[in-house]
Each structure stands twice: as structure tokens, then as C-alpha cells.
Length: 365
Ligand SMILES: [Zn+2]
Image (tube, rainbow, N blue to C red):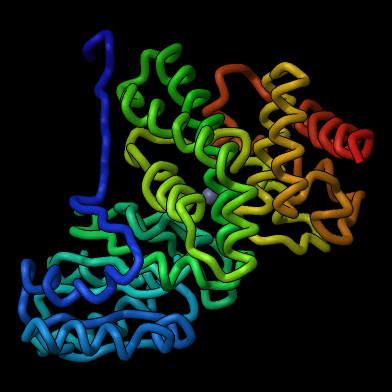
């Protein structure tokens, strides 16, 4: 193997973001096919159904059908949709909704060997731009991360739609995106030290750092604007940070301690927060593990507090504190992404770092 390894980068082929761009859906679909099929969730698709249909019709590529029954991205649901539409000559999939609907649509397009256009309806996830589908069981137990051979042909982000979704979504999206500026460099350093075959690209790390700078500069303002129903420059900047920048360079790896801590904490009875919110807490834990300067940790912690992201145990729910060491052990599972940290992390270190975050936050209140 070459000394310098192989640099990999996977990006969506096209990214379009702005107010009202959903009206261009039909024109974009036409570039890829004539018989679009829409995969969505019931609530999410109902919000945009009329505009999706109108845009497709105006471009002379009417919807060949739709399935809006996705409530979880499961193998069964993916196979069911594929079977239902096998004889419809579908040549492009439009995946419309939150993470589960979008992941389901991408997986369906993979099985049909047709392109996928993703149309997010909220901002809690960057799944729309990724070349994977996270598969769960019917009762939301993680099954596997299914890697796709093709990334989406287009991510169409209408900020009128995404920016007017309930405000908690953009906060969750920011919490998840926060991690990328810490996890990607940790992953890159680890791969470099291991002389591993997969290396991160400099481009991915640079864009992830830009994502962090955008979140710090505009995140709090964006939340205020979304709260008052306004789609401003700050909202646009943050939506790009979440939807494009945080996922930049997928395929060059990425997750490290922040997501591993999330995975551990989800095993604790009483946890009552969403993915991105727990990842934000995990990011603070990673910063402590890395012994970052106190000023840097406090800055991120203040930002989290201003957004209502959890910084204390009590913020995460009525946690069963007796389960915390088990969570720390889970976070250090050799199959989890803690192994992407450039130094050995033990469960004891994770537990102490979580307690340190809780203590620091308490002292700042
Ligand atoms: Zn995440």
C-alpha cells in the first residue's frame, strides 16, 4: 500500500438551496427521467405534496405514483416499495421528508438502479446529501448502515419549507453538525498515524471547520429568526452548514468520540433527547477528552446553552445515574467510533469527562 494512503470523498452531484426552489423540482427531475416516484413520510409529504405535484406536472413529468407511509427506514419497507413499483417503469426517485423518508427513498433508488433526488422538509439531519441509508427495526433499533453506490443526483433544499419547520429541528441539526469540526480532525489524525488505507481529504476538514465557524457566528441568530418565522441570511447560512458543509466529504470517515458518547448515552434509561442534541453533549465530552483549552470549551458550551442544547445530565432527561458507567463502556466498544480517536480512551476517562462537562456547565450557570 502507498505510504500516503487513499483519499476519498463522496458528495451529492448537485446541491441547490434557496427560498422557493421546490418549484424547480420538475425541471430538475426532467434532467434524469420521465417517470418520477415519490417516497415520503405522511406528515412531511403532506406539507409539500401540492407543490411537488404542480412542479412535476408543469415540467411534463407527472408523478407516476407515491408512497407516503414511511415511518421508519427498515429493510421491509424498502423491499415493499421496490416490489410495489417494479412494473411502473420508474426512472427517478424523489425522496421527500426527514431522515427516515429520505434514507428509504435513497435505498429504493439504489435497488432500482435509478437516480435519486432528495427534498428535505426539515433540518435535523444531513441525510439528504449522504450516500448511505441508516436501517432500523420497526421499533427503532439500529440494524446497519447501508452504503450506496451512488450519492443523490440532487439535494433540493427549499429554505421556505425547511426554515419554517418547527424550530427544534434546526437546533438538533446544529447539534449534530457541531461534532464534525471535532470528529473529522480526530479521525484524520488517527488514520494518518495508523498509515491506514483510508485518509480524510484536506477539503473535507477545511469545509467542516468552516461549518463550525458558521454555526458559532450565526447559529444563535438563526434560532431566533426561525422562532419568529423569518428566513434570513443567518438561517440560510446555518441551513447550508447543516445540509452541505457538515456532510462534506462523507466517505472519508468522520465520526469519533462525540457520536460514540451519543451511542453510549442512548442506552441509559431516562434519556429524553434527540440524536443531534445528544451529539452536542458528546462533542463537549470529546473536547474535554482532548484536553482543549478551557476558553474554547466554555465558548462552545455557552453557544449550546443559548440554543437550548443539553450541557448537563439533568438536561438529557431523568437519567438512571447507575447506568452511566455502562454507557461509558458502550461508548468505548471496539466496534464503535471511539476507536477513531488518536489516543486510547477508556470507559473511566469517558465517565470522568461526562462528569466534567456537567460540573463545568453547572459552574457557568
Ligand atoms: Zn449524527
